[in-house]
Image (cartoon, rainbow, N blue to C red; front, side, top):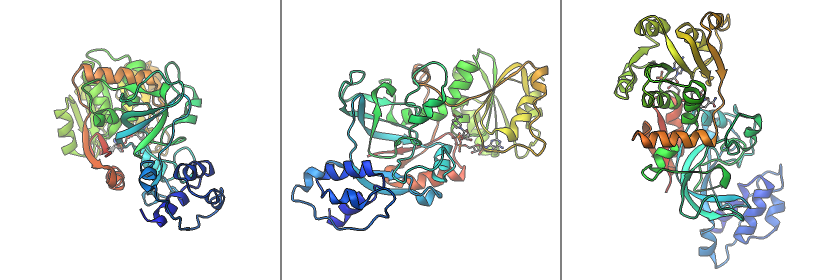
Amino acid sequence: MPGGVLSEVVMSCFDPSRREALVAALGLPAALVVAGAAGAAPVPRVVSPSNSFEQKASRIMRSYQVGDQKGLDSLRSVEVAVPEPGPGEVRIAVKASALNHRDLMVMEGRYGGPKPPSRVPVADGAGEVVALGAGVTRVKLGDRVTAPHFSTWIDGDYDPSVFVADVGNMRDGWLQEQIVLPASALVKLPEQMSYEDAAALGAAAITAWAVIEPFGRVKSGDVVLTLGTGGVAILALQIAKMSGAKVAITSSSDAKLAACRELGADITVNYRTTPAWHEAVLAATGGRGADIVVETVGLGTLSQSIACCAPNARIGWLGGLEGPPPAGPNLGPLILKNAVLKGITSGSRKMLEDLLRAFDGNGVKPKIDRVFPFGQARAALDYLATGGHIGKIVIRHG
Ligand SMILES: NC(=O)c1ccc[n+]([C@@H]2O[C@H](COP(=O)([O-])OP(=O)(O)OC[C@H]3O[C@@H](n4cnc5c(N)ncnc54)[C@H](OP(=O)(O)O)[C@@H]3O)[C@@H](O)[C@H]2O)c1
């Protein structure tokens, strides 16, 4: 590797602590730490690699970073030092990662405030444990693992503090060759589950699960309504079908609705050609409506979701794809229907464990639309932004 490339690697680290670790790991002059002090513009410098390059190269990996978060053009591909696990942490060789709508928001600076340019995006992934920090006994080398993006939410009620360790947002995410995570966050993959399927069963699946299972308490024969054909909605469809529920789903595309019927959807409505889609859902359920609503769109569709929910329905509001109508959402029918509207913020490690067991036990594979190679992460994000997908977009690492 030419010395200039090593220099680029170092100068790409704006975070002083990361820069320091990188300089130490590569055995480079300590002066580079000072040259890149916080706030300083990166100054191109040529660093001559020593003759032990092979040894150093094994400590370098490829990674993506969020850059200045002004859109997908901000995504940058870099080489950095392989991160070392601290006490209670493990290092994982990432085999697959998966995209979510929020990754677009992160790249546009619209999710959780501005981040250091060196932050690694992407909330979901799976891989093999390759290094253990001090005191780790929960997992061993070679284990195949994944983790919820709220890496400190193990079980029980939601607490806002989980955002502090949100993977791909407040701490480095999966769009890198190796990731360090707390061992306490990890979930072992069922034996038959591929890394790609496990990555696809991350944030979107956990959130759909949180609505349908712990909140919705789904029963066989319930009607579950979900909107659109993105990651959350399609995983909601699959989870609901596993539970013996009937599924109503909307889309702007008849072709996508046909794909939903193949996945088991019972009621399919095109919300473009049938703007009063709530009436179609009511008609298709004999006037009763949906027992559980996975509200992926938000305030823009909430009035219609409430209008077509059943008595005693549970509505889990998780999405923000459309803002409120000018007059605001019509919440009045919640009272007459004795329905419950609850905000849903993803879920815990326990929920991830339960949903992996459910997919594995039922022999169901998450619907993956396309798999991109690691080197084409930008193309994968572009594809997500077009909205042409059904279900999940996965990136294969290595
Ligand atoms: N609260 C949480 O913890 C949590 C977790 C995950 C996701 N989310 C949120 O949930 C939403 C969906 O996320 P995602 O990752 O599933 O997104 P995604 O994969 O990008 O899916 C977006 C899909 O939504 C559909 N859509 C857009 N506007 C619609 C409308 N007016 N009516 C019906 N469908 C509409 C479109 O489906 P068609 O092409 O079929 O029309 C579009 O393809 C986002 O707002 C995301 O931020 C929240």
